[in-house]
Image 1 (cartoon, rainbow, N blue to C red):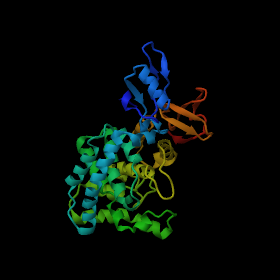
Image 2 (image 1 turned 120 degrees about the horizontal axis):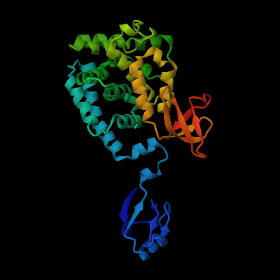
Image 3 (image 1 turned 135 degrees about the horizontal axis):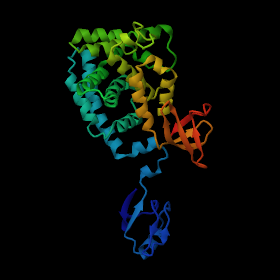
Image 4 (image 1 turned 30 degrees about the vertical axis):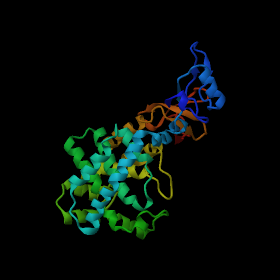
Amino acid sequence: MKVVARIELKPGMVIAEDILNYKNEIIVMAGTKVTDNILKKLARQSIMAVPIKEEIDFSTTHFEKVRMTDGFKNFESIYNIYFPVFKRYMLGAVNKSQPINLSQFMEVYTSIIAGVKSGEHLLDYLYNLIPDEGEMTLCHCLNSALIAGVFATWLGLSNNDTLLLIQCAFLYDIGKFSIPYQILWKPQRLSPEEYTLVMQHTQIGYDFLKQVGTFDPHILKATLQHHERCNGTGYPSSLTAEEIDRFAKYIAIIDSYEAMTSPRTYRKKLHPFQIIANYENEGFERYDVQALKSFLSHIANSQLGFNVQLSNERLGTVILINEKALSRPLIKLNEDNTLIDLSKERDIKITQVF
């Protein structure tokens, strides 16, 4: 909504709030479309300024509204300026054997996040970016680094550990640049041979970083171990929890979260409660429990007040997060204010978040 002078009104604009005369009587109701007759009526009543709806006021979902905000537009503009810079640094290292200067990567990071108010805003902005299909690997690496800063803050990591985690996130998937793009982002299910090839990216990345420079051991281990899982089901070495580097455990969560929030040719991006449900179904066996709980709790609580559609097609609002079932909050239905506790109504799911 914005307020404009009456003389700036044009037919077709929509009144955002009830307009009152000097007797506090409503002379034009909110939601009324401006016509020539409305303009004459406002002039007769000596109304000098009028609230009108802006584009964002017509958005129906939270994510549509995010895209309309000045904050997102500014973020998208800065991201698009620094993405080619990051691309030049990364591909220069991979294709031209140029030295990897982590301070240059951190300049990209700090430049992009400089105008973002909070971690919740940053995740919202990243969720709404539309990646170039030809740049998916680069987008994944840059976005993971941006997410790492939020993750570190929510975990309460020290400044040194935060810096190190962001650096890990920039480089951990560098081995993917050696995998054919058409296999890496193949929309169909990978063949056993193709999957075996993709699995090699952790070892390829580790060997590459050891060859081209001297890096913190945590960066090297995060690169090698970010697909290891705490229950021993990961690769390349089927390590268990106590054998996996702490930063590799953090990166494993960041990597999987970024993948779920990004669109793929074979599916849409998942909404926050779908992501949380995926982790709840099997994540606490595979990922570091304390780190994952902290991350998911912040994501879930950021959804308070959001409108949702349920699998029974009813609409409602998230009013309480169930700490023992983060993906299944308490919903107040729009139609009659009835409360539905999804932690008890297990046959009902959230299908959309608005």
